[in-house]
Structures are given as C-alpha cells and as structure tokens.
Image 1 (spheres, rainbow, N blue to C red):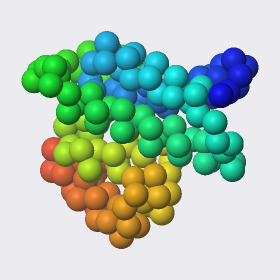
Image 2: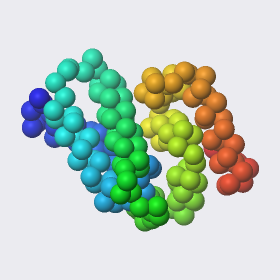
Image 3: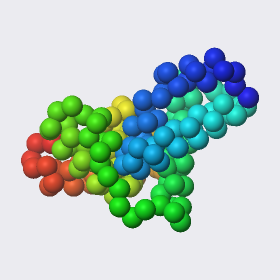
Length: 157
C-alpha cells in the first residue's frame, strides 16, 4: 500500500490527465469524479513498485480507461450525457469544436487520438497501454484523423 505522500504526489502529477481521460469517455461530471476517486484508490492500494515514472503513468492510463469502460457498461448508465464538462476544459471555441468532435469518435479511435494528441504518447506506447499491436494503433489514428477531417473540414491537425 502506498503512503499518503505518494498518493498526494500522484494526484498532483497525474490528476489532470486522469480527469481528462474520464471526461473523454464519460462526458459527465459525476461519473468523472467517481472514476477519479476509484483510480486513485486503486493506486493507493497497489503494492507492486513501478519500474519508472512512465510505467506509473501508463498504469494509471490503463486503470482509468478500464474503470471508465466499466461505468459505461454498467446497467445504471443513462443513455444521454452532456458535454458541459468537456466544454469547460477548453477556453476557445475552436478547441471546443475539436474536442467535441474527438468525443464523438468511436471508442477505439477516441482512445488512440486522445492519447496521441493530448497526452503525447507514440503509437508503440499506445499499443502497449491498450494491449494492441502498433500497426493497429496507426490504423486507428489514421481512421480517427480522417473522421475528424470530414467533420471539421480539411485542415484539422
């Protein structure tokens, strides 16, 4: 089990990333806060040491994505969600439009595009995190970009 100082450090360093991932998947403040707490509780209870900071970050991304998917699969999940929290993440209208388009991508494309463009992971790193082949990630990125180009018009990147 981690100490309180380790947990506080993790929340300070990775809290924004975890929250953004939750918003990307859940599009709802209440579920985002629930999953945020769940992720850091799992972090606190995780006994195995991390090999590096990147390993720790990748572990948190994987746990966050899995926790979000659990919520989305739950019986009590409502069929409609708001984009209010997603709009709070971005100050400019253009950024909101891009974020809204990313949020509307199919889940596999959304994960790949978000991790690549918002978190800065390479295709190889995304493949390890999502437990997929690197070429699969490249395909998802290409298809996700194409969908975004069609929705946003021409020069998205």
